[in-house]
Image (cartoon, rainbow, N blue to C red; front, top):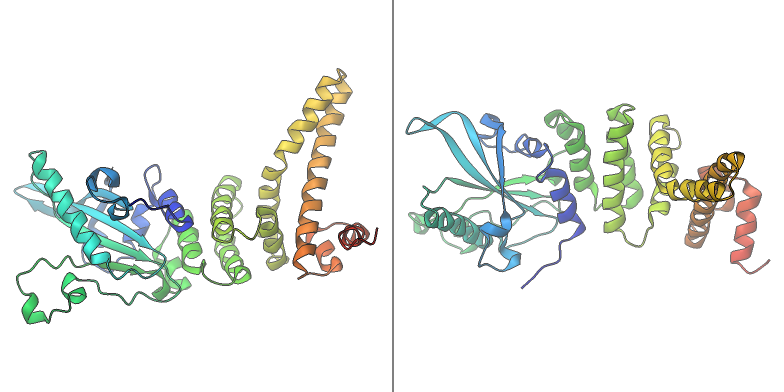
Length: 339
């Protein structure tokens, strides 16, 4: 059986998967003795598809990799272990069974390749609407009393439950900006949208004014929210973001940068039009015209969508988008068929 990745899965893998250096942030939230002793520089990702070969796609791991443990050796060599990261945004009672299958499949792969199997640590990162309350051991899901579970493989699961970590603790334990903001977004993604956007902006305020970081993180988080809330367009999302951060100069910078990315097409179209006219001044005029048309069209779409929601008045929309109130009222009359 195949499974379609959710927006939560895609966001998690994009932030913490290969190509990024954010995985150590997850270990900083793990309450386990070995967590502070890992060597982040030793990280090697393994293919979850390969490890789950022969299993249904729903039984393949989200992130798999190996790490060395500092100050620990086996037969004189640094101790290496494999982590299996599973990410869940909702409850999943059968998760210990899935992880038992994955651990066994991984050990079988090592044996097929003539290698000594490595210790495996299954880790769950959870950010559901409610705290994780499902079994974390096979013996628990099988309903076995402790004395009956003696001697059986139990595949204990380490849990990072974001719903049990308050925002201040998240700030203290996660030093790097991208994983810190991203984890806050995951933690609050089930909140009402205005509350979610307010939390994200509070975390992004701490990033300073580095354009590249603001654009990278802001775009990723807004894209995540848009996919979780497909009923809200990116333009509407930015408009809502403007509403909840109207007193925050830093976030105005972020919003302007994100909007500028959206009107880039209009700028280039205007430039091309000016160039085709064959006049040097037309090139500059075309660039300016494209910029103005791109902004104008983008603002009009924002206005129409906000009006259709019937949440903000024309006066409030004009204030949020910093446009002429008369223009907003004119669009409202057209929508109502009064023009």
